[in-house]
Image 1 (cartoon, rainbow, N blue to C red):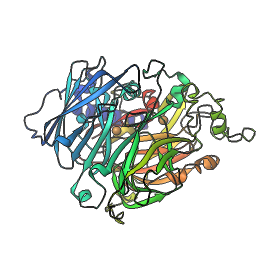
Image 2: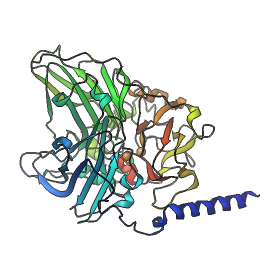
Image 3: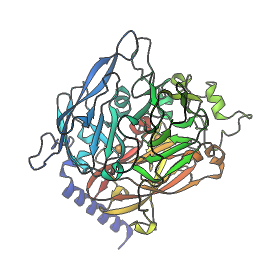
Image 4: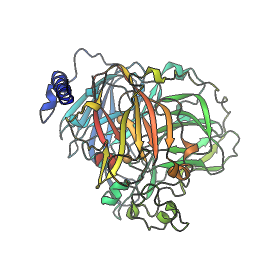
Length: 539
Ligand code: C2O
Ligand code: CU
Ligand code: CU
């Protein structure tokens, strides 16, 4: 059989398969089959989430208009929803592994929208793919079983082309999952277990959210000039003299953080995106890319009353759109960071001059204000994680490639821009297999010709969590990479991984249980909206 004919057959088979599985894909508008609760789904928990434009008091003076999610428990424990009335942040949801959950999403916004459960392993049509966006006045009914391990997940808008703007306006919140294995551990709980969403925002003189990125700012990703914790600019964490579990989410559109304690203490990491690590890991600093979560165990028991501690973001080399791979390392002895700090580089400068990417600034203030009887030590063993092996992969000899590139004012995956109903043969994942996947950020030269813009890309896969197998860094990128390397945690289960310039990362990712469309994209939300996103068809 000649090659052309084989190609033709492959293509025909693909089209037939698509038609069989997704007849509706060919229609311009997917019918929302999930607009009603299904009678055969017996929900343990029922929630209602309403999205609407609202004015809240963030600063003194004028109120700020935000897009607010408010939650209500219709069935189940009252603590399944914790609203954040004083901030733009969506409510924190508390779910338990094994629960069957029904969520009524009501869209009262003056725009289309849809919510996605980031990190949860749910059926494709419950995943909040942009094709399911609902109009003003419509509802979407999610029904899924919580299959994930205990961990810190989150949810956010995932609307085609406007995800960045919608998340920025407030459509994002934490989603905590518990399970019996985790609850049997002696980890801080209740008021000593705290979720912290870190975001950056900019406001105009009327206290209104400012989001008008120009092309250069989109290429870099939007950077705000003020840090918000749980949707508040003035957040202070008051603690007692005992141990705490801090669940950190980087819910920023594009900003990377290099977290470190101001007193130089090591950071004790106990969990990542997909839940607890086998053992706590100590690092001098911790990288936190957009979309990622890290759980810390912090012991304040030896602190005197009224001690203040600060979690800071410390300097690192983050290339800017002006920086071509390997070409900017040595500008008359002045590093990129120095130049950026001085506002000489194009990327994001308008908005970020006060808070440059890779600068040194405070993130979270902690005040020890109560005595406590203390708490137990950090458990040495937290859980057991079965390592995936290369031989588990259905494609161990030939990894799936995703090359990341920024060119011609667009952000691409394998040279493609996001488009609905546009599955290509290399974007089909066989159901119930483990796939070896490589994210290549200019390690092998990248996609297309010539130099490409050297930028970090936090790559995210929907569906099940994956394991990180290998990192490779190009020689010319190694010195910059050294400024972040010790803050990367590769053990455990992940759904997002930070791919630095000149780096290639290999992961093992299961595609079990659910057929249908799941996504892969950069979690720099401006990059996502600029097209660095693709649908994957699991079948
Ligand atoms: Cu948190 Cu598809 O994203
Ligand atoms: Cu996601
Ligand atoms: Cu990106």
